[in-house]
Length: 380
Image (cartoon, rainbow, N blue to C red; front, top):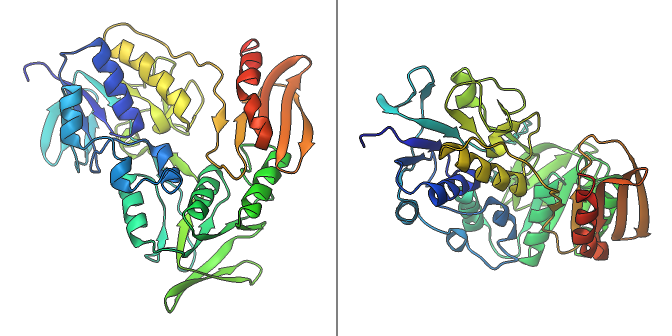
């Protein structure tokens, strides 16, 4: 290639979405994607619906790197670790090789949080953060097994519902009082908790796993109150955090994520960040809708038209058919919660006078998502 390529580090939803949007605007500029994993294209949110959608890991893959390279008129290097970024000379270091870039995009995603306690490193304690993780998990999981999930957040609850649909027994343990703590107010978290319990899940809230040990063919989890739970596998779903290792080593300004402005520009010239690794204009948003908005804006910038991202109303929708949940987080805006409904059917409006700054809907109320999104948009 006579011209230094645009390089995207990361082939998750962010990296491939950006590549697709960029190719809509620029067919010819050399494009290189680098991935530390197998570089299959897949939608990460779909990993927690494998049983519901009746999809194996291979069926969740939308294309191997060869297919994606042909689709995108790009070069793709999988199982490749970038050792260093030299922002001054605009090049990457990879196993002694120097690769020049014209523009560089960090789409390195997020790493799972890992708990440390006796037995936390046992082989049957897994986190599922990509398609390779999911493939290994599904291969190891046998029919009708008992799965203990540490964490009643978004991912933990979605996996719990999906596993029950697949015929597995599920126990969820979380030190918080209600499900989705930090994302939704308590009445909505209680509604989801009830829905999962009604579907067969055992919910042990206000508890945490203090140790794990092998017990013959199963794992024995000891909780902080002395309760013992025997399970065949344990999923650690205690949250994710932006992957900052490469960015920090390169001297880029980082906070909770790689710091960018609304044009996704980092502190180094011609270096950008998007997706789960980015802190855009002060916010880390680990969801699909803001990611797609960022990909469209950055594609324009990379093709020569500097563009700042602008978000619409972006409610978060859980994939928990036992009790659907839709939430538009207030994001620090003023207001108070007002609730109606009961059981698994809760409607909460976060209002500042007549201004709707957020909402949460569970159960049957989830059908009001579109109408309330339009109402909130009028104040956005």
